[in-house]
Image (cartoon, rainbow over all chains, first blue to last red):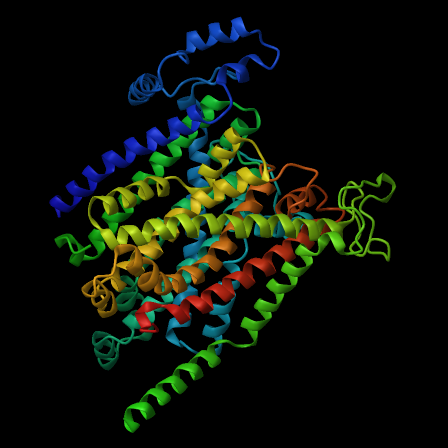
Length: 316
Length: 290
């Protein structure tokens, strides 16, 4: 087990270095000179040259990468030239909103997906199972921005139960805060539950055919106890992996949902940086998101090892 | 001999039976819808449609009529024409980007799976780096620098698809390269190029093509997401995603402006998913379907 973790950790280092390099190269090699963006189109060549010198843009690219990486490792991601805020401040301010959204969405997806998966697995091949498998398949074809608009139309425009947009900080009004997260989280959950349900359902069907389940039945245990205690944990291995794999999709969905529902999270920060061409914020946010994503995948890998003892001995 | 032939015939009969049972009416409905959208998008210039970019400020958000079959949008442009020309953008990006992915990713995957060694480590490693970015974030960032155009959009989404195709091609090549017919070809002295192109490619192509259709569905969704955020194909050209984004503004007055392109996109994505998933099940190597 420690050997496995150490090997995965060692693998993490080259991936993170490559991620930082790619982020840097996207920002440096692609057209669009930072100095022109800051000074505007009417800038004189002398002014541009002076600014380029001040920012170190006239130095060789490998040197710029190393000095940038050195600053990043000390926690200095740069500073927005539009608002003057540091990237780290901006990210820290908005991260809680995105994290809350993602956690609530994942919880919602589990709340919808797990009971449905169990109900389908109990009578696999039945009418309910076939109906739900079909619905899950069609839900996979509904992008987040479609379900988001549909939910706004239903609950905000027609029924007027929930606010369509707006955000209340948790410290001010916890209940209002949750209220404005209902529709965004539900939008993301609607795209997530079919994936979770499909995986758990097929694993559960396989588990229910094991001998020890027959044994538990023969002992006369209650069906609900067999399902929830004996069958659910061994069936949830793939579920954990898939949850991890889906984090990438969830992050992408967060950008869209935050834009639809006007939530001040990381996604809106990224979009705002793109719209105003605030390239330093953009570079910083992409780096933070990608590193966070790599680390989350690492944690999920580890969680998988904890759940499945067979992997600890390096058969993965 | 006679018994052997009989067995083969029976097997063939069982195989085609299973095949026929799986391709239900739903599969053919999906194929028909894809074909329909395809033909309409390809023939858009020859159809008797009003212009998709001409604005008519007196006819804003007009209801269905004989002049505008599906009404007009918030700038008085014909909704049906915009839907048809939007289909063109969505399908162009949706088909061309996975073609980039299947060509480069398929080639890399086959070479990595056949030659193994350092080359495989390098390919798999660099794909891991590309996969380390959430796809939509990478697409957004690169679009922001490169600028919005149909070509840029297609290239970005194409490159993003390479890792997935590489994995599918490499996985199939790894199992196939150990099969008897490859070993036989090697024993006969066939060159690497011949083995790759004549022996392996025809077998790897099937799972790749099934995956290609799923890739089209994903690409249409990502293109829609980018256009929805206003970072897809630049206006006034319409795409389903940008139409949904514009329709969101008038959700209270004319919800159909968002829902018509939404339905079109949903049906198309669903159809590609259905066809791709059916073909994937048929070509799954785990069922010994080769």
